[in-house]
Structure formats: C-alpha cells, structure tokens
Image (cartoon, rainbow, N blue to C red; front, side, top):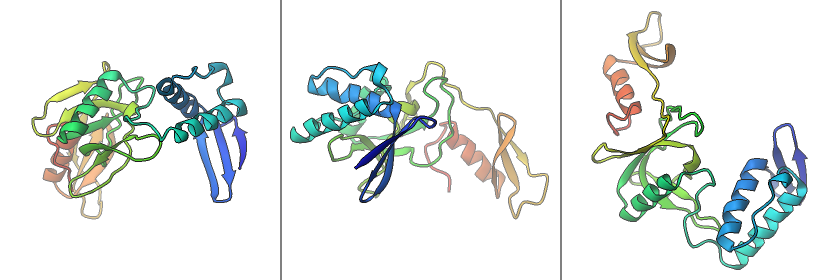
Length: 220
C-alpha cells in the first residue's frame, strides 16, 4: 500500500493492488475522534491533521477495532447533533418511516435532495456500522449523510421532528415555460432561478409539495 498526500484537495490518496481510493483530511480526523472515544483511547491531535502520522494512527486504530470485532453500536459522524442521533436511533428501533432533508450543516440551507430521502433507518455491517436508509421493498440502502441533515420529518404524521436552528427552505415559484421545451410545460424557480421543468402544472406542484415537506409521496 502506498499513501500520498494531496494538500490542494486535502486528501489522503491510497494506492494498492486493487486501485486507488481517497479519504479527506477532516474525515479521517473526525472519524478518529469518534472511534478512539468509543475504544477509550486518547483523542487524535488537530495539529497532525493532513499528515502521514495521523493516517498511520487511523490505520492502527482500525486494526484495534477489527481485533475487537468492530463497533456494536451505530456509528454517527462527529458533527451529527446528538438530537439527530437520538431521533434516528429511535426510528431505527421502531422501523417507522422517516423523511430526511439534507443541506449545509453550517448555514442550514436545504440542498433540495430528491432521491434516497424517504425510508426506514437501519445500519450497515462492517467495523463501523453506519446508519442507512432503506426504501420500501428494498433490503438495503445508501449510507446516510447524517452530519448533513438539516431537517427530519415523520412520514406518517408529517410532524417535523427536528430542524437546524437556521433551517432555510428555498422560495419556490411555478410558471409556464416560455419557450419550446420538448413537451415540458411548466418550470419551478428556486430562489428566482430555474431549477426543474415538468410536463404539467400538476407534476410541478407535486414536486414543490414534496420538496417543501407537504407530502412524502415521491414525485415520478
């Protein structure tokens, strides 16, 4: 295994017989904080962020974790609020459906993510059992970006379970398409810029309702 540092993109570049992978400086540091805390080990030094020494520490810590059989609890990111962790764990245990709104964890701005946002919370296997979202009729799903969640909503009741203190829902406006657009008749403006186009007013309205949390029925 060969490890090099890309300071411009703040990445560790790991080359082995199977190919090349990358891990961000911040991701390695913050994961180390979480794992070492669970193992009862001393926290990593922030002065070593982006160094080969810290990546070696990361590898050594993962080796210890592997020898212990991996974590027995769900692994949440360092920046994931405790309240969010608590809600997700509750829904993992109850198997009730939840709606995830992703966004900027600093500003609270909603990213308007349309896919992989509705389902039941479960968790992966492996050393770090990360939370995943499982859609209806599926047995697995993508890992949650739990540190990028800005709002959580119960699918059945529509109740907002939690939202970022500065949560920002974009402003939507529906209008007719003013030019030929291959059968697309209406468009949705987000903060006064065209974001998406649809074949009918009803489909545009459904999309806006979904993105704003008025319905959890995914648009086709």
